[in-house]
Image (cartoon, rainbow, N blue to C red; front, side, top):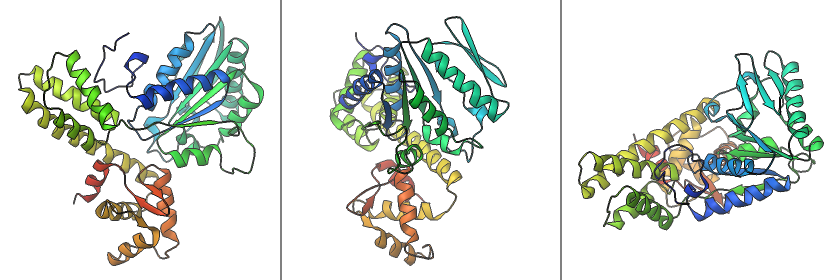
Length: 373
C-alpha cells in the first residue's frame, strides 16, 4: 500500500506511512520482540517518531487472532514534579474502554474489570486483576507505557512492583516502554544492574533521526503526493539539516510548504519561508522541553552548562573544561566534582551526548536556542 498521509504532525498508525529505514527496521524488531514475550525499551529524543513506531506495532499486533494491547501515554506529564494514580489511565486499547472520573473499566470477552483510583490499595489490586484477566483471555497481551520515565515520579507507589508481578506471573504479556530521556528511564527501570529484576531479558532499541537522504526523499515524495514540484533539492537538504533530521520538525516543514503553496505562494518562495516558520516552531518546542526539565531539576546551573557546550560547538569539552568556563562566568558549582552530576543528568535527559569523557550538544536548534540572549 502507498502512504496517503504525508506530513502528518501527529503520530501515525499506518505501517505504510512509517518512513526511514531505521524506523521501519525498529518497528519490525520491536514487533518480533513483543511476539517473543520479551520486555522492550524504545529510546530516542522527542518528536523522533517513537509513538508512531509503537502505534504501528500495536496495530500490527491486534491483526493477530486474540491479541490485545493497552496503551498508556505519559508525555503530558514530562514536566510534572509528581503524578498520582489518577494519571495512570489507558489512552487507547484494542479492548472496550469505559472511563469515569474515579476509575476506568476495560471489557474483554464480556468480562469487565474496573480499576479504581480512589486509593493505592484499590488501584494496585484492580490493576493486578486487569492484567490477570487480559492474560487469561488473550493468546498474547501487550502493555505499552509511552514516556515511561515519568513513572519514577508516581507518588506513594513504586510501579515497578506491579511490573515485576507481570513479568513473573504472566508469560503471555509483553511490555514496551518508551522514553525521550533515555538515562532517566533506564535508571528507573533497572536502578542496580547487579540485581536481577524484570529488565534482565529486556531488548533495547534506539530510534535514530532521519538521515539527510531520508529526509529529502520524504519531502520529495510528500510534495509529489500533493502535486507540488520542487526542483531545488538543495533547499530541501538545507531544511533537513537545520531541523536536525527530527521527523516531527521535518513533517511540520513539509506541511507548512504545502499550505503556503495552496495559498498561492510560489514554490521557490514557500521553501525558505516555511523553513523560517519551522525553525521558530522547533525552537519553541525545544524551549518547552527545557522548561519542563527545569521544572523538575530546578538548578540554573543546568542551563549554564548547556550554554557553555552550545558556545564551544563543534568542540566537545571534558567536565573540568566545562567547570573552568563556568568559573570564568562566576556561575560554577561549589566543587568541581559537582559538575559531573550536572553533566550526567543532562545526558540522561537526552540534551547532551558524550564519548571518551567529552560532552557536546548534538541538536543544532537546541544550540541556537541556548546561544540566544
